[in-house]
Length: 178
Image 1 (cartoon, rainbow, N blue to C red):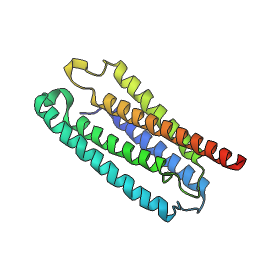
Image 2: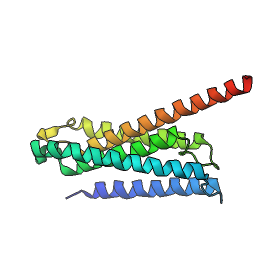
Image 3: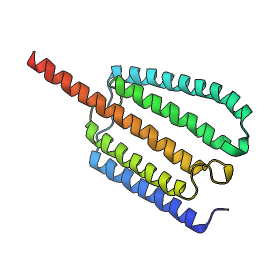
C-alpha cells in the first residue's frame, strides 16, 4: 500500500502540471495549433513508423520475456519501454520532416519545455536510483527505470530538434548568400 506522502506528492504533481498547462494555454491566447497539409501527411507517416517500431519491439521482447524471470523485470517496465520507444520514434520522424513544430508557435518554447521535463525526469530517476540502484533486491526498480528511460528519450528528441533547427538555420544562411 502506498503511503499518504506518495498520494500527496502525486496530487501536488498533478496540480503543478495543470498549472503549467493553464499558463501555457493563457500565454498562447486563442491561437490554435496550425499545421499545413504537408505536416499532417508527415505526422501520419511518423505515426506509422512509431507503430512499426512498437511492433518490432514487442516481437523482440517476446523471447526475452520468455527467457527472463518476470519477477526480475516486470511486465509494466517492458511495456512502458515500448511506449517510450514509439513516442520517441514519432517525435524524431516528425522533427526530421519539419512536422513537429506548428506554424503558430516558435520552436524555442517547445525546446525549453522539453529540456525542463527531461531534467525533472533525470532528477526523479537519480532520487529513486540512489535508494538502491537499478536492481535493489534483485528486482528492477520500475519507477527509476521509467524515469531514466523517459528522460533519455526526451534528451534524444531534444538533441534531434536542436541539430535539425541548427541545420535549417545554416541552410537558410547559405541560401541567402547564394
